[in-house]
Figure 1 (cartoon, rainbow, N blue to C red):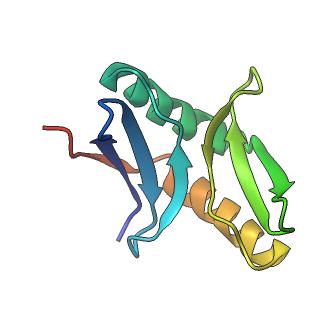
Figure 2 (cartoon, rainbow, N blue to C red):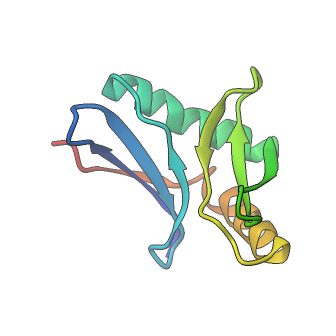
Length: 110
Protein backbone atom coordinates (compact mmCIF):
# COMPACT_ATOMS: atom_id res chain seq x y z
CA UNK A 1 0.00 0.00 0.00
CA UNK A 2 1.20 3.48 -0.81
CA UNK A 3 1.70 6.31 1.63
CA UNK A 4 -0.89 9.02 2.17
CA UNK A 5 -1.50 12.34 3.86
CA UNK A 6 -4.21 12.67 6.50
CA UNK A 7 -5.54 16.23 6.61
CA UNK A 8 -7.51 17.09 9.72
CA UNK A 9 -8.83 19.91 11.86
CA UNK A 10 -7.57 20.35 15.41
CA UNK A 11 -9.73 20.96 18.46
CA UNK A 12 -8.67 24.62 18.35
CA UNK A 13 -9.99 25.05 14.79
CA UNK A 14 -6.62 24.94 13.03
CA UNK A 15 -5.53 22.44 10.40
CA UNK A 16 -2.64 19.98 10.21
CA UNK A 17 -1.60 16.82 8.44
CA UNK A 18 0.35 13.65 8.96
CA UNK A 19 2.20 11.78 6.25
CA UNK A 20 1.69 8.07 6.81
CA UNK A 21 3.54 5.17 5.27
CA UNK A 22 1.71 2.28 3.65
CA UNK A 23 1.68 0.48 7.01
CA UNK A 24 -0.26 3.47 8.49
CA UNK A 25 2.66 4.60 10.67
CA UNK A 26 3.13 8.38 10.93
CA UNK A 27 6.41 9.41 9.31
CA UNK A 28 5.98 13.20 9.32
CA UNK A 29 3.74 15.59 11.28
CA UNK A 30 3.07 19.13 10.13
CA UNK A 31 2.83 22.35 12.03
CA UNK A 32 -0.65 23.76 12.65
CA UNK A 33 -2.09 26.06 10.00
CA UNK A 34 -4.74 28.77 10.35
CA UNK A 35 -6.62 27.64 7.23
CA UNK A 36 -7.27 24.45 5.32
CA UNK A 37 -5.82 26.04 2.17
CA UNK A 38 -2.56 26.74 4.02
CA UNK A 39 -2.39 23.11 5.17
CA UNK A 40 -2.96 21.97 1.59
CA UNK A 41 -0.11 24.26 0.51
CA UNK A 42 1.98 22.58 3.22
CA UNK A 43 1.25 19.18 1.68
CA UNK A 44 2.41 20.47 -1.72
CA UNK A 45 5.55 21.80 -0.05
CA UNK A 46 6.26 18.39 1.53
CA UNK A 47 6.01 16.75 -1.88
CA UNK A 48 8.40 19.29 -3.42
CA UNK A 49 10.92 19.48 -0.61
CA UNK A 50 11.06 15.73 0.13
CA UNK A 51 12.07 15.18 -3.48
CA UNK A 52 14.73 17.88 -3.07
CA UNK A 53 15.99 16.13 0.12
CA UNK A 54 15.67 19.19 2.38
CA UNK A 55 16.03 17.25 5.62
CA UNK A 56 17.59 18.73 8.73
CA UNK A 57 18.91 16.01 11.04
CA UNK A 58 18.54 17.00 14.68
CA UNK A 59 18.94 15.69 18.21
CA UNK A 60 16.43 16.27 21.01
CA UNK A 61 17.39 17.52 24.46
CA UNK A 62 17.28 13.88 25.59
CA UNK A 63 19.70 12.87 22.84
CA UNK A 64 17.17 11.20 20.54
CA UNK A 65 17.65 11.68 16.80
CA UNK A 66 14.83 13.12 14.69
CA UNK A 67 14.49 15.15 11.52
CA UNK A 68 12.64 18.14 10.18
CA UNK A 69 11.71 18.71 6.56
CA UNK A 70 12.42 22.33 5.70
CA UNK A 71 11.29 24.68 2.94
CA UNK A 72 13.72 26.69 0.83
CA UNK A 73 13.30 29.60 3.28
CA UNK A 74 14.49 27.36 6.14
CA UNK A 75 11.07 27.11 7.81
CA UNK A 76 10.06 23.71 9.20
CA UNK A 77 7.25 22.08 7.21
CA UNK A 78 7.05 18.96 9.33
CA UNK A 79 8.91 16.90 11.90
CA UNK A 80 9.42 13.23 12.54
CA UNK A 81 8.99 11.21 15.68
CA UNK A 82 11.96 10.62 17.98
CA UNK A 83 14.05 7.66 16.87
CA UNK A 84 16.12 5.18 18.85
CA UNK A 85 19.13 5.50 16.54
CA UNK A 86 20.55 7.55 13.69
CA UNK A 87 20.06 4.56 11.37
CA UNK A 88 16.35 4.41 12.24
CA UNK A 89 16.09 8.16 11.55
CA UNK A 90 17.71 7.67 8.13
CA UNK A 91 15.12 4.98 7.38
CA UNK A 92 12.41 7.50 8.31
CA UNK A 93 13.88 10.05 5.91
CA UNK A 94 13.99 7.44 3.14
CA UNK A 95 10.35 6.61 3.83
CA UNK A 96 9.30 10.26 3.50
CA UNK A 97 11.24 10.53 0.23
CA UNK A 98 9.58 7.37 -1.08
CA UNK A 99 6.03 8.11 0.04
CA UNK A 100 5.54 11.89 -0.17
CA UNK A 101 5.74 12.60 -3.91
CA UNK A 102 2.78 10.42 -4.94
CA UNK A 103 0.85 10.24 -1.66
CA UNK A 104 -2.90 10.72 -1.87
CA UNK A 105 -4.72 13.01 0.56
CA UNK A 106 -7.37 11.68 2.92
CA UNK A 107 -9.37 14.75 3.89
CA UNK A 108 -10.81 14.16 7.37
CA UNK A 109 -12.06 17.75 7.74
CA UNK A 110 -15.41 17.19 5.99
